[in-house]
Image 1: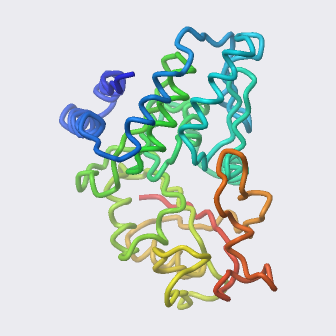
Image 2: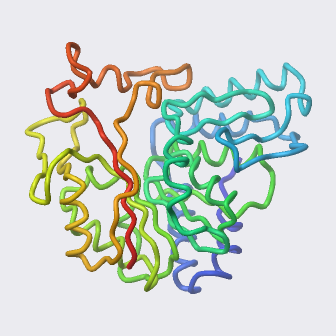
Length: 326
């Protein structure tokens, strides 16, 4: 199956400046056409082996589990082939999905995060949305289901991009949600093109968090909304955790602020109407090992004698959702 981003261009060129839509299209197409990852051929084989003649009798992008097709839309041997293909695209981290009766129980219950934020954000109907670090595209599908005119998800990890294309192939419908193999560094400066920008689970991986926030502001139109979800600690406006080495076994965690500090950072970067709308301690029911992600997960990242601490002895993972206007 050849990855073709022309449907994205056809949609984006109607809603974004021509130069920007063309830039995204050509860069994404170049990345997939010239990918040299060692698993690229296996991922391509997974897409090629997906049952090609499936057509869903129904689909639902607004339920906690994204549903595509009904069990009666295919027979058991076809569903077994579907299972085998999707297993070749492990690890499945963001979901869940149910495809023609086959459930993909992903590492994260991403619907829990969506349910925590959906009533707080500006309605997405008719909006141009950017989702940074979108993974498999689960939240992109939810954004499209909420009525967005264009959802551009970006993620530099090609396996997640291929998971999106597998789901898209099985959906076989014209839905304006697209996942491109790009990183935030690929977004041109001062685009000011999007009505809503989501940055979820990204900030703590950035060496320069203020630069990240300023870049997000550059992506938003004046008055646009930032939806920022990140790790936080308890404390006041000057409290920030800087892990000496790893945090919850993750190597690339740089800064974990308190909510008050994060709100201050956003105001300092020029954002307005900054407010924290949710704080949640991540549970082992929300992030866990499954048949679709068989490696270590949250329970392995916590202290063996105290689940209130990370493996290294820092406060256990707690996540906040903060909204702000550009």
